[in-house]
Amino acid sequence: MKKTHYIVWALVASSLFFGSCNRKVTRIDNLKVTDLSGRWNDTDSRLVSAEMITDCLGAPWLTNFYQEKGGKKPVVIAGMVTNKSHEHIESEPFIKDLERAFIKTQKVRLVQGGEKREEVRAERADQQNNASISTMKKWGLEIGADYMLQGSINSFVDSYKSKKYVLYKVNLELTHIQTNEVVWIGDKEIKKYIKN
Image 1: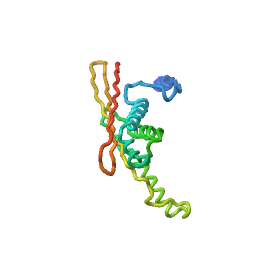
Image 2 (image 1 turned 60 degrees about the horizontal axis):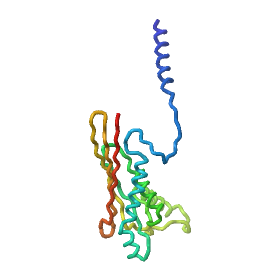
Image 3 (image 1 turned 60 degrees about the vertical axis):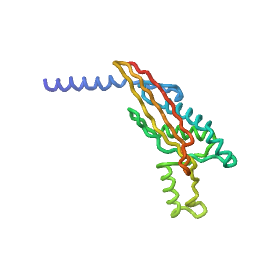
């Protein structure tokens, strides 16, 4: 009787396991808007970054810089974008979308920041001992940034019973590093209605 009991439990467990493996995966266009949960997603990141960089580069600071520097492109570094929203949002993919939008325009030069800059510097340090003199990269020749882009992602939630509105507000600021002058402030809002 005990052996039969174990066999029954084994069959039940295996049927639950194999019954839950009926997942179907379909590849879709990565530019297609997909909102399954109503949370911040890749579409939000891509659209917000493209719109905000377009606004940033259309502001007077860029024309003023070109005029002051004889048409030379300003050098920009992406700083921190802090998540202050109600949900977990990885800021690195959003920062990469911002950097990509900057580079696509070819209106500014972009330098590496944060951990990636430290990794480049570590490689340069390693080359001092391990690379040939003719290929070794020298210290003190990095391009200094003229401006730093920083910002935050905030959210506001209003819910009642099975209905919920979520407002994401992204704020970005561009600061002249030498003078600490804020030359551009932009914000973009995305509002989502979620009904369960």
